[in-house]
Length: 212
Ligand code: GAR
Image (spheres, helix red, strand yellow):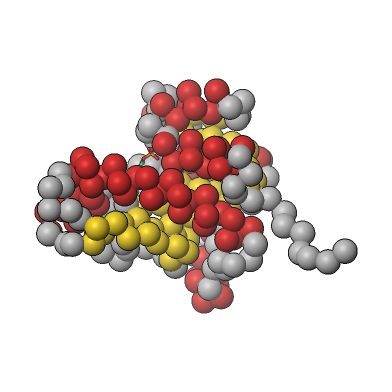
């Protein structure tokens, strides 16, 4: 017998809202298109539709709200503790609308990934699709990347380009970008599982040294 055995990755997904990328990861896992499985949903928003999606697929979820913690640091630690307890291999941000702190990253160096609706490094931050549309670019898209301490920065794993069409609106463009996000996010997980996407050494060293 030959060939490498691929170990499916266990993922914790962090989402704050509708959770369509969470759904894409669940669907890709259930249909065998992704070498990974969603083992946990963590959210900061008790009203996130992502919770309904997790329930429907019997995925454990935890709600950790900022208001229940005296400091930002204690809140971040609660998230990191929940991730650690679950023993997952990868933390996948999917519309998680909070900045990940250096102390969180230092506990999971090179293991946190994010999907963003632009061709990074162009248009980081909020409303990336609108930023691209208003700038007047002819091509935009989406990116999955390893997360560092910046906003939508860090080594790129995979991107998909989406043309801006003459008759586009921000809504139409966003919908076509989202379709691509749902394709590349599971692909990125599979690439990591197969050793085809590795966090660069220098990046890992930096993440390891963020805080102790
Ligand atoms: C997605 O478009 C994702 O790329 C974006 O939030 C949306 C979440 O949708 N994330 C960012 O802008 C991160 N900077 P979803 O809840 O349906 O997955």
